[in-house]
Amino acid sequence: MKFGQTFTEYLHGEQEKFLNKCSHVEYKRLKKVLKSCRACRMLNDNNSGSNEQSKESKESPDLCKCSSCALCNQMFFTELTKEASDIAGCFRSRVSRLLNLHVSSGLYRYLWRMWHCFFDDQQVMIQEGRMLLDYVTMNNIAISKILKKYDKIHGSVEGQNFKIEMRNKHIEILQSPWLIELSAFYLNSSGSEFGTPDNVFNGQISCDLNGKQPVMIISLSDHMKYEFSLICAICLDTVFNPYALGCGHLFCKSCACSAASMPLFLGIKEAHEGAKCPVCRAVGVYKDAMHMMELNLLLKNRRKEYWKERLQAERAETVKQTKEYLGSQSITAIGMWSGTRSSGYV
Image (cartoon, rainbow, N blue to C red; front, side, top):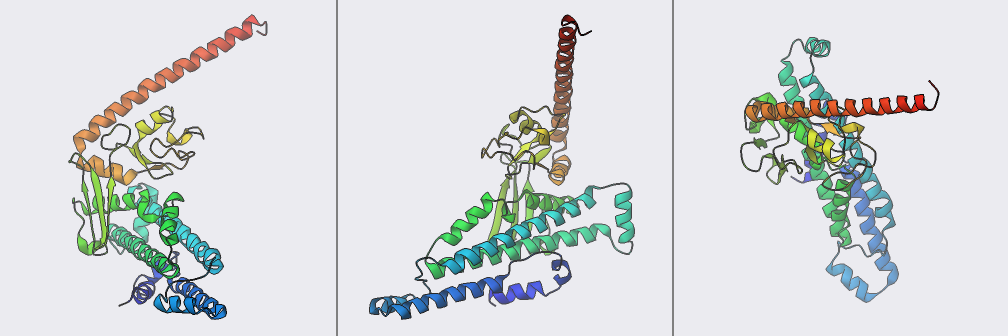
C-alpha cells in the first residue's frame, strides 16, 4: 500500500477525533504542487523546441528543468514550514498538558479523576501518549517522503537541506526534548525498563541508565530508531534535575546555572539574555528552558542512590550560594548606607 493511502487512512481512522485538534502534513496538497512543477518542466521543454532537451527529458522524465522553480520555492517550502511549525506546537502543547496531569496533585488531579470517573485515568493517559507517538511517526514519515519526492523531481538537495533548516528552527519534533519527556512518561507509567511493543506504535522505548553512556532509545518503527544521550555535556555525568534549553540540549540544572553565572536559587530562566548554550553557543536559549520532570522522575526511580547523592549536593550548593549572595547584598547595602551618611544626607 502506498504511503499516501496509508496516511489518509490514518487521518480518518480511529484517531480522527484526536487529530481534529491537531495540525498535520497536507501530504496530498503538497504532492499536487510537485505535479504542477513537473507539468511546468514539460511546458518549458515544448516551448524550447530543442531536440537535445527533448531527448534529455525522455531519458529523465522526473527531473524539473526550471531554472528557478518559483512555484515550489514560494508555495511548497512556505507551506511545509508552516505545517511543521504547527505540528511541533501542537505536539508540545498536548504533551505538556498530558504530563501536567501525570505529575499534578490536589484539586487539579481530583477534577481529572472525576472527569474520567468511569475509566482508569492511568490507561487514558497512556492511550493519549500512544496516539501522540503515532502522531509524531506518521507526520515525520510524511515530511521525509515529500522532501524526497521534491529532490527527485528537481534533481536537487533542497529537500535534504530543508530538514537541516527544520532542526535549526527547532520545529523538528524528532529532535524535540518533548519527545524524550513523553518517552520517559511512558516508562514511568509502565513501571518497567522496556516499553511493551503493543502499547507504542508497534515500537519500543528503552532506557539504560546504568551503563557508561546513559541513553534513551526510541524505536518508532522498523526504520525510525533514535538515541538520546542522557549525559550532561558540562559535568559529563548522568543529568540530574535536567533542563533542556531552547536549543534542545540537556544539562543538569546546577551545571546550566553555573555556565550562565546564575545562582541556583534564582533558576535557569533568570539568566541574562546574552547567555549562550555551552554546546551550540546559541544565544537567548535560557529563557525557553524546559524542566524535564518526567526524565527526572525516571532517574529518581531507576538510580535512587545516585539521585539522592546529587540532590544532597545540589541542596548544599544552593544554601552556600544563597548565603554568599545575601552576604554580598548586605555588604553592598551597608556600603551604600555609609556613603549616604558621609555625604550628609542622613
